[in-house]
Structure formats: structure tokens, C-alpha cells
Length: 232
Image (cartoon, rainbow, N blue to C red; front, side, top):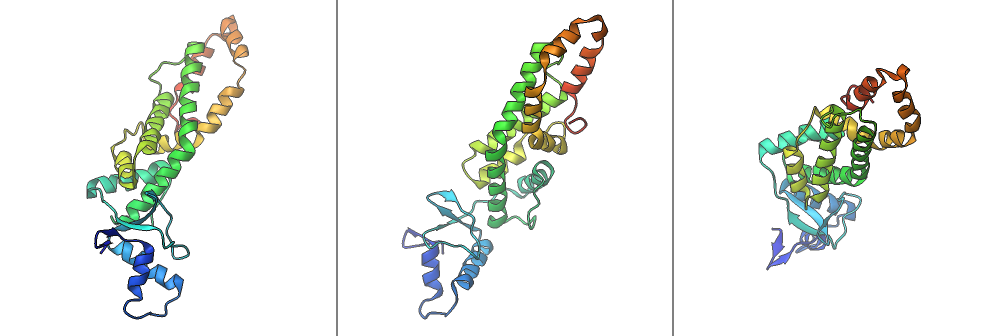
């Protein structure tokens, strides 16, 4: 059971249970293995002060709590697993729905949101500003639409309270124009924003005003609006 007399279970309590009534003579690593396998088999996960921890055979602190892992529906899970691979390039050890795999997916999504959300938002701001400043890009361009979808997804993941909520947010997110395009936008956002910052727009504005600059606005629009999966 995950609790005893109303007291939430901890790794330490489970370790005591293994050695009751008699000590089993297991090493700490073997005790950890027993506990981790039990947790995976019974859809439990480990937390510390309410937050997720990366439990393993090598590290399983006695103070960590052991709590039931809520699961999404099978349909939501399958969609989330496909999107986890397609958007973020993360393949789980197994597609089987369990507390262990939901926890792994949630941790990967939390890491992606923490590492990528700021850059994704910066790219949206740069594309909106440059397009408006030069008057060359419509707001519905594929690149900007993809960047906005990326920001919406990462913000939803960052705002989710737990692993289950992150999995459900991924499955429910709008993916435009494709998972591959969205993933590339997220992965390249920091580089693209930096390249925009380094562009000498005064020269471009001057070129647009010249007779020889006829058609340049069409090329700029095409580049700013291009699908992220087609044009870097």
C-alpha cells in the first residue's frame, strides 16, 4: 500500500517493509531496484516536497514520498507519445501507459519548457516586429504561425502543475503546420532570433526604397513567412 495508517509512504518506509520481519541482507542498490520495480508495476511515482525527482537504482532517497501516479486515457497517451517524438525528438523506453512512462514524459516536457520557452517567445516578438517595421510580412505567414504555436505549447507545458497535466497539454495542443515544423521552430528559435538581431535592417530599408529594390519585398516576405520545416 502507498500509505500506512494515514501516513503517506516514503522510500524509507518501503525500505523498512522489505526488511520486516527479518532483514533480507540486500544491498542498498538492490533495495532500490525492488522499490523502483514495485513503483513502476503499481503506477506510483516519487516526489520531494511535492516536486518530481529522478528516481533510479543509483539514487533513491529515504525522505522521498511515494505517491500514486494518475494516468491519462489511452487515446490521449498515444497522441502525446507521438507528439513527444515528433515535436521534441524524445522516444520513451516503451509506449506502454504506466505511471513510470507518464512520469518520464512529464519530466521531458518540463525540461523542454524550461529550456525553450524564452527563446520561442523571443522569436515571435522578433518576427512580429520585423514584419511590421518593414511592412513585408502578413501576420498569417507559416513561420510566424508555427512560432506562435510553439510558444503556446511551451507556455501550456510550463503552466501545467504535474506530469499528467503536461502530457494532456501536449496531446491537446494545436500543432501547425506539422509536428516536424513545430519541433524545428522550437529547436532553432534562439538561433533565428539572434540572426534577426544581427541583421542590418537600415540597409534593407534603404534597398527597398531604391528602384533596383523592386521585388525585394516579395523575397523578404517569402523568407519571413516560409514554413519552418522548409526554410531555416
